[in-house]
Amino acid sequence: MLTFFPLTPERFGDFERLFGPRGACGGCWCMFWKITGKDYHLLTGDGTYQMQKSIVEQGVVPGILAFDGETPVGWIAVEPRREFPRLARSRVLKPVDAAEVWSVTCFFTAKSHRRKGVTVQLLQEAVRYVASKGGKIVEGYPVEPKGEKAPDPFVFTGLPGAFLKVGFVEVARFSPTRPIFRYIIP
Image (cartoon, rainbow, N blue to C red; front, side, top):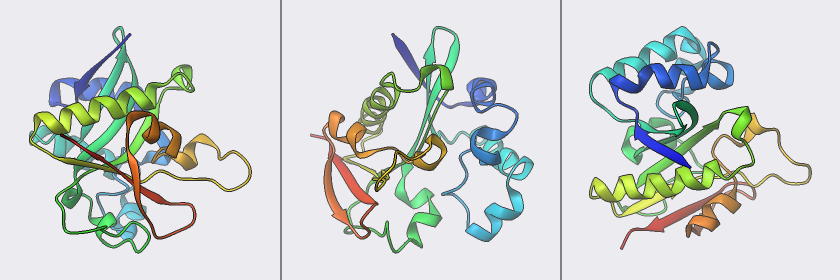
């Protein structure tokens, strides 16, 4: 059974262990959606690591870690949409309406725990977390690959099936492969 903890300064070492020395996918350190494309390409690696660490040290919780015992095995980024400037510039993932939403922008699962339902459990935990913070809408931006199965690094925003299992519904699609899903918290 997995346990879940928000990423706080005390848990940053666990985040580092999960992401490894290369920062998950190519040194992202889960900063892809938080900075412009130009800055991201300039800072990838040590720069994005330092930015994420600084954000966490300031008391911001950028997401939730999943643990199998004492071992970090999964990650979900979830914050208010306004914290992700790259989303604001996206034509494909533009806002559906003016509602205040929390956005799920990224998943990372340890190889040892992939295809075991960790993403679904992380989504469930994200919904609980957002509800505890007074949020009413959780939004996600999964990839719907056409044809062949996409490699794991290319589906870091999740797949529609995981969102559907948790009760999210598709609310918009501005691109054939990028639906926008929402979960309304009662």
